[in-house]
Amino acid sequence: MKIKSAEFETSAPTIASAPRWTLPEFAFIGRSNVGKSSLINLLTERNALAKASVTPGKTKLINFFRINTNWCLVDLPGYGYAKVNREDRADFNVAVANYIEKRDVLVHLFVLIDSRLTPQKIDLEFLNWLSTIDVAFSLVFTKTDKVSMNAVESNVALFKSTMKSFMTVSPKIFTSSSTTKRGRKEILDFIEAELARDKASA
Ligand SMILES: Nc1nc2c(ncn2[C@@H]2O[C@H](COP(=O)(O)OP(=O)(O)O)[C@@H](O)[C@H]2O)c(=O)[nH]1
Ligand SMILES: [Mg+2]
Image 1: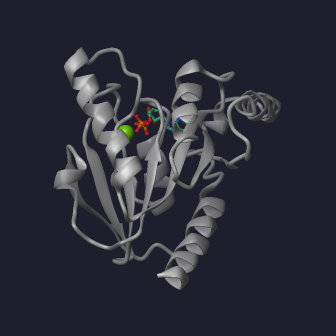
Image 2: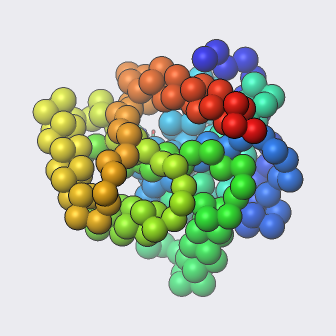
């Protein structure tokens, strides 16, 4: 799919103030610093569209980007940052949970996982919660340029087998790198197919 236009639309602290539109949305979640904003920039080939932040936890808002005028990428706040006080953290959790559970136009959620790491508690806990919600999602293992192919493969395999303890179906898996552009085509092709499916079922 060719990205003809990509524009920042708005930021919202909760879904109450999210855009009231019927555009299909594809959202990105994962721990702070996993590469959510970088992946959005990679997909759109706009280097500064989503701010790739250096301070974990700074981005607490839900950011909406309108693509090719008729669909939307959503940059969700990262989970599990320590620098924020308790209250902020609770707010953010509720807003993100609400978005995932209640946003009617959410078509698909990409859960980003750092490919350099063995399965982390925080990601598994999030996926455990997600498995109780009726939402389509897949996993994207990020930063694959930073480790060997073998390390990526073994971390992905370990992740899959760990997930089997609480999930019956294995989600689709992508691997990505904002420096080598790995995964860009696969993820965009997937989004294109989902958009066609969404349109057909509307
Ligand atoms: N080498 C490499 N660095 C990455 C990649 N993705 C993100 N980063 C870096 O990791 C840091 C956090 O990325 P960011 O997109 O802001 O993460 P976010 O907090 O999940 O939005 C930044 O310094 C990025 O440049 C990747 O695929 N490869
Ligand atoms: Mg970010």
